Amino acid sequence: MGKLLVVVGLLIAFGGVLVMLGVPIGRLPGDITVRRGQTTFYFPVVTSIVVSVLLTLLLAFLRR
Image 1: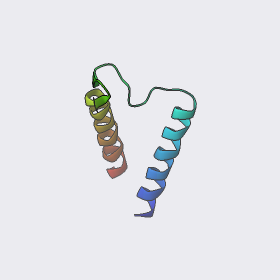
Image 2 (image 1 turned 90 degrees about the horizontal axis):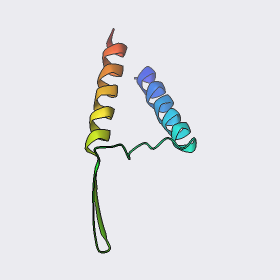
Image 3 (image 1 turned 120 degrees about the vertical axis):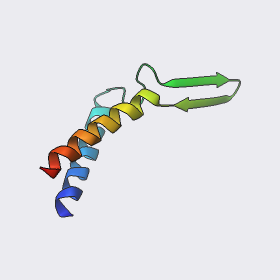
Image 4 (image 1 turned 30 degrees about the vertical axis):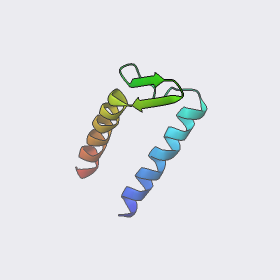
């Protein structure tokens, strides 16, 4: 459990560094944005797929 918490913490810190450097995390091509008047709907399709693949690879690596 401790190992998992350390890995999750490092991933969050790494994501924070990427955001501070200006990497557009969460605004990838293929994400759906609909703007009508003052209402905005955002659905991160591609971002969700990328995060899912990365987490799957990470967890598969940690299980070995």
